Figure 1 (cartoon, helix red, strand yellow):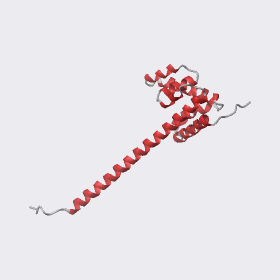
Figure 2: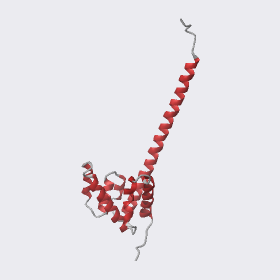
Figure 3: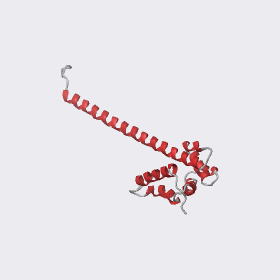
Figure 4: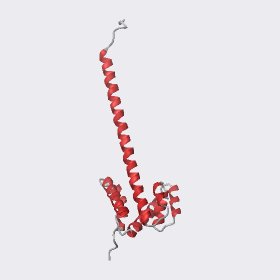
Length: 157
């Protein structure tokens, strides 16, 4: 039998190293998740501010709806001259989402044109699914959304 006072230091070192490595990996994962949450929150704030500004410039009385998910879609439909109730298509998985997406794109097209920007820019998010273009297209759309919101363009003759 082994003496109980005998300690195998090799196993302790290995366990200690594993604990440190596990803690470091856990910390990195937590930092990554926190970073993603902060980035998503910043994008949400920017997107909501931009749509709220667009709604105010189009003299929409309930521009604060830009901050409420789904209600912001109803606001966009209304600004694009569709009835706001089309937003209830979101309750029908896939079969409702497709026509709602089409209506939102058409609404965004009309809104961009009312703000004297090319309507085809509303099609940019559709290119987000193209391999290799996704992030670039979405960043481009968000930048364009900022222009539509905060930069007034005079109507071209």
